[in-house]
Image: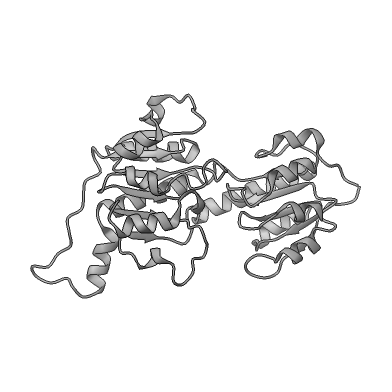
Length: 330
């Protein structure tokens, strides 16, 4: 039986690429960053599998130009980079890597909350700028114990954040559009309407997938409902916040500050207003950026790819309805 052809569109360590080479014929994108759309279309003309990052755009036109493609395996939990509806119509499985990055993202979220509460970026700048002198100090921070954390999206990561916040003595509430029935003893907080969460919370943390329903779930109206001393944290997707509205809310002190690992445009333009605001803490999308987590994500992405190419069911399929009409080797 002929070995399946695979296109690998991200750099891999030798031991990882060896796993794929053992089972497949492999073509690789040999540069940093993402292949262009034209390069991707050309590479997928004969490919049965695609392994790429969650930043690689795989739209309907790309999928229509890939007559043999059977699986798109994303290196990442997000999959809004893939036209899942088009993939399903074509019988192409779309896979992602959830679960294995929950701890890393939850840890970063709590790091953000601690940094905001204790004004760590402000204190660090104070020292570096040479302003630390007798009688000179930064503004006082706040304890976390007794503060209300509002979690928007109580999935895997949201639950991990809730557990960590509980250890710090925080109170909690959550909003989830799916209205899940969750054991309150496991998540330590109760469901609440979104507007009430925004009004009541000292910290609001976003943990939702990017969908039409969650696009700009936080806009000018929602920001206006938050307490003047409240903080917004986003480690999910940049597009769930209306970024110009957030800039205005930060400039006008409608809210006290924000900590963001994701932006609407990544990387941001050099003149991005958020980068000029002292009450905005911005990181370069590093939620899953630990050695252990990236290794686990990569292993799961490769597992998904190889299992799908064997005609079996991968562990993480985001469009299981495509299993019934999946493409077979030609």
